[in-house]
Image (cartoon, rainbow, N blue to C red; front, side, top):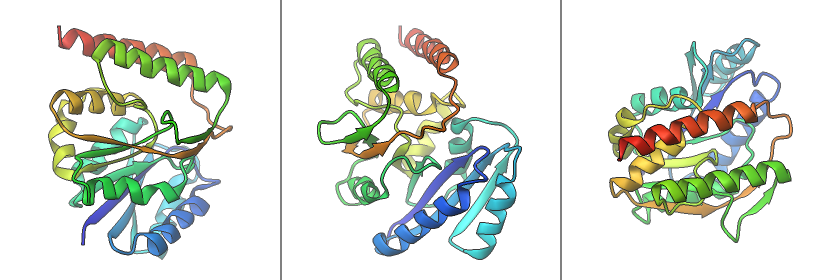
Length: 235
């Protein structure tokens, strides 16, 4: 039986954390019984009651644990949690559960059964079902087109918050990734493809979180800066 760590990075998710973690926990019990699953909540310096909620949830359920980090950044959360994991497969999903949980078994089986090194959810496959604003859809499409142009990547969606890796692959790639925030995924996938690791894209059902507080102009600026840095490193 393969062991799976499901990492859930959180920042100020007090209002929805308990509900969403319970939904995830029940899904893993009912639909992933052939695996040994653990949920790891990683609090990225929340300033509300998120940390207390995470602590309470882990007290009630032994299959749920938590980590607290003082600094923000999804990349920082994944780096810390994946490096400390002893599971066969490490994964993560966004705390808002924008991606349907019913897609998770296919993500895992791509690694555990089909032999891929990395599996990623993709909102840009023909069979994916996505509900999002035109603005975000356009930005995402432009971003991934830019990746393919600059790096000749073959994957279509670098930033969907729904991924899984063999732990040994994560251990080799993480020390090479410099970004600690939103672009951690992009840099990791580019490095993985350049080094010959196999990546499987899984079509997903995905619904945009309309309460998201992502600063789009700032994120775009950081993305361009990171991509230019990566491009220079291969010149």
